[in-house]
Image (tube, rainbow, N blue to C red; front, side):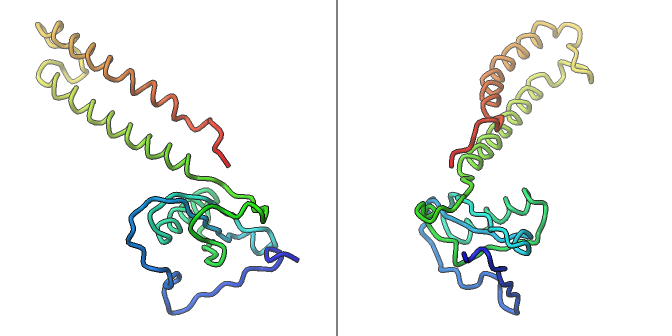
Length: 175
């Protein structure tokens, strides 16, 4: 009988849920294995194990827990401290795990791209302010200037569009 065949005991008391985490001030991003028990624990199913990159165990637990809560659409879950640790899962135990490192890098790239796009839009709007009407059409005598600005920003936006197409999430995440 494996440890996953037994229901995981739940413990909720007056102390913080994860109050015994070691202090970690290294601020070095590294892989962590985080195992989370969700509602499946009541049916005898195995908990879910994730690999994330963070700079402390506390942040790794928060990241994996947030992912699990969002993916399973439930807050009925918690980290199994005894099965969570710094480093990659022990491959010899045959644990199935989800590697979230690539997905989080993709999310960070999307966030960066959105920030760049917002800056580009702000610059464009500043460049055409007073030269276009409320529909974005060039005012009389401003057509040449506005066309030049549009052309410049179309060229600046094209590399962003190409980069966005590569961040569509359809590539398989490594395990």
